[in-house]
Length: 308
Figure 1 (cartoon, rainbow, N blue to C red):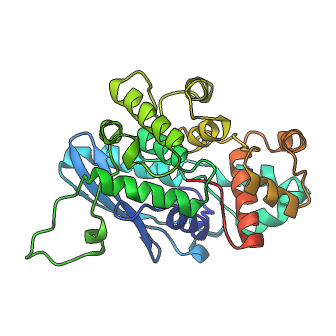
Figure 2: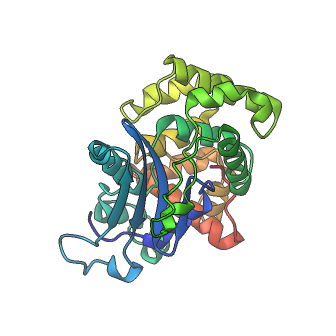
């Protein structure tokens, strides 16, 4: 992983969007349950201190440690790949920061938080369901809806043995539900408006039967077209999923009000059309620019209200 790495920004995002029982942040460590090909697992990923991630870091880059507990050790490569995608470890922060800082309106934000990454996703269906639950609600509201879904499906991790020394991992209690489990719950057990709950169930059923494929192997154009064609999924949700699941570096969610508020605070255009035009200068890293705009809005308003 190349330096710099914006540890505080990543941990703040993960903590704000965490689903109780499935994931949490404690100090500089992110804990997460994982659904893997051969069973379940957990991971504890410890990120470097912010002062250790500047441009003076040795060529090997700042150190990130990950401790896995897996039902089957054969799942280690897959679990590791999930974590790399989640933390956006393959990004080129020097090129990204240089491109964005060339715009005077973004230069101060980039200097204040160098090495911002775009948090990824460990599972396609989960990412889509969480994005749908986050439509038109605050981050806290999306978090609550996802937590209720986890409790309703009740897919629990094995209980630790009584004679084992307790660790923070033990606070991970559940796996995020499968698409099949969500579809089987029915809309009555999904928080939010009935229409959205039904859309979530329908999308979950489509993913479960294979008629809708949501994984990191698709292209942005292909995936967003397939998603927008389904009732209950709009451009914001499709773009958000593409940005986080596919790791598309060039998605700017101009339909997001909080993002546009952040743009306004930096003296950038705050309308969709004008911001889209101005953002051409940030290509091919508009996803990272969006992270700076969200962070600016958070700093300016004290909260971030833009979905899951």
